[in-house]
Image (cartoon, rainbow, N blue to C red; front, side):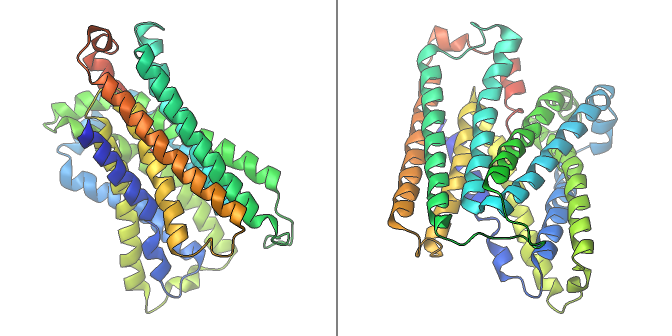
Length: 370
């Protein structure tokens, strides 16, 4: 159990810090940095990792069962790509703090409960549900985490309350209501990552193991489909942005090599974060329920602490800082509650042992990446 939580914390740490090297690029506009980042993290890194680590990639994806699952996986992955793009739009309207909190909050709420719902559908409401005490702890932990994220969002609103009304590049006023709506819708679509894992986990699991690979590489195979499919949406979006804003010329700079290297580090950490999460979630029953929330909460917590270290909140009102500290405290407590729920699940009682069978564990371990 402890090992799985450590992997979740490591993944959240990497996801919270992956963007840091982007601060050191030179002569790149925002569209250049993020356009190159998404090309690397969605295409270059997954293809390299899969080619180096997975045996028999061609045989795996030529398997008839995998072929049948691919269309649904691709559609769900593209919806995930749209959700990530909407997140960027939400941040444009309502700022990073509130946009990040609402988006991740929606993802945590839906993504954490989805494995439980899937198990209850497959095995029945009673047999598929966690033991009552554990279920109460899971719901309580998620509720406390979401309360912390709401405090973070409140802190963002208070910090920006005294700022003059902003306009976008077209001279149109930014809309708080539109931004909130976009963030929530984007969070819902981003759970397409989970759906893709649910649809492809079973067929790919059999094919990956049959090709002579260990079980944990199933996540790499599923992520290859998810990243490539979602990357099509992101590549199209940034290609349009770079063209519309005439940013292509900024790639022709003496700093391109060092920028490419810095952004590759970003891409690798972004991808490795998902791998760390997937491995941690595979280590114990109902791991995705607990690990998913810990993973995303750690990411938010690291982002908040990074903002404090870089003095982004120095000029914020005292009420905003108090709300931020309350939010961070709630998230830490919520993670502790979730960890205790997994400790309860690890006890060798007959009631807990009947919650979920080995095959269902394998299926659920593949549902909550992202």
